[in-house]
Image (cartoon, rainbow, N blue to C red):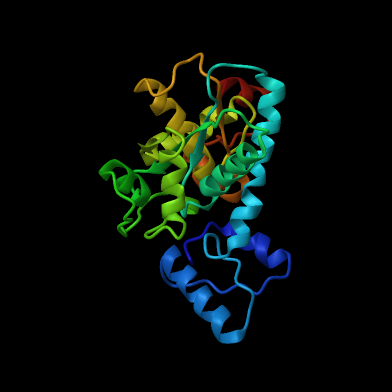
Length: 253
């Protein structure tokens, strides 16, 4: 979509991709990409549409398992994993990875998976809260462009990632998402809005008693803040322009 952050477009162009900006929504761009792939015989790797994307993303589940063995050891409490959700492919891929590990007998306790969506892009959360697997399209409006989706292409599996693990879906405001970018920065993590959404979900979960402060928790950051610098700048105070003197530095301390 033409509204994609310029840094994402720049990356594609630099690596030699032929980029066309669609005058429409994320969903319009996805639909057109599928049609174009069918028309011209291209390989379509759209998230949620191509089954290999979930297979790739499930390796995050393997890495979480490997990390938890080292970091947590034996614990009676299940790990709770927070994942931001748009199309639903990342959360469903992680869930699939966990299921593979359980089937192999390597993971004895299924982690609880919490999906986090922006209030303005809540198609899957709406279905979860309604107790149904029927995903109803919405008109998404959120500053977290990576999870701004009208009709999630992997919605049902994303829903089951929560329902089958004793998890749930949590909604957070755009204001909380932007504030979370700055909070994560203070501990050395620079996240794009979609990545910060998962952390905002953790804060909301703690406030509602969904998790306790001593529960083992992992928050998945799904994207670098360099993907959307304009959003990051909304989370901080603008840097002043000063004259090249010590006096000017002192005045701005």
